[in-house]
Image (cartoon, rainbow, N blue to C red):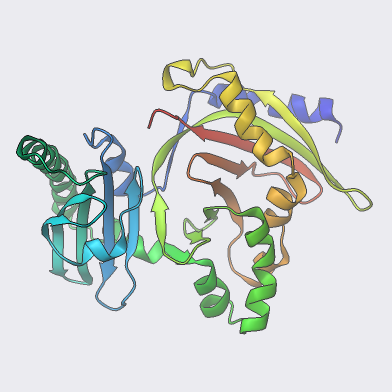
Length: 305
């Protein structure tokens, strides 16, 4: 398919230019994007009774997992925290806990008071959203932990690979260096040691067309189309967009193409539909794309959040 044909095929994406993608998805976690957090770091920790693993969904920066082991006003050498359990020993859930970080150690009394006030407002909003779900007698929206696996868990536990095969299969992921991969069944694979997933709003800014040549490999057409929406109120200008897209196109085959079309997906039940880099760049595969030709939609997070 020529560049002209690709452009004609995907011009309808302009209509999506102002649409927002909120990742991760889910009845409960989607509602947390509007927390009145005032740039504080917020981590929501999910743990089921049947497992020892704890999954964190966070806004801002991740919270150290050891801080989430207890409730109350907590301090470390790096920051002041407020921790509160929303659910505890409830049916299949061991705990659902919210931890808020001030980002620094608060020494002055007035700073601590203001931090606790803001933390309480955040907790109140989360409690209200949680009650709405419980009122519906639906527990599954709280089971975010069942949707997140580390790459090692995916390769070793789900695909039953031995250690040597795991090392070999991890190569494309280690080279590309994504934060997480979205799969077609709604689950996520985190490329890291801990199951932590950032949440944010993403805006469509354009698309990258590509084709695959057996001799040359994956060939990036670079930026195939551009969003016509004015995203400058969100801090997203042309320079920011071009910088984000360049991160993918300057090493397109190793950074993205080989990751999406690696053979490891043939062994599992689901296929990748999106890749997140560094929490602020989301690249999604257009549904009709395949290894030979297609388009990757590019979404970016506002630098203001």
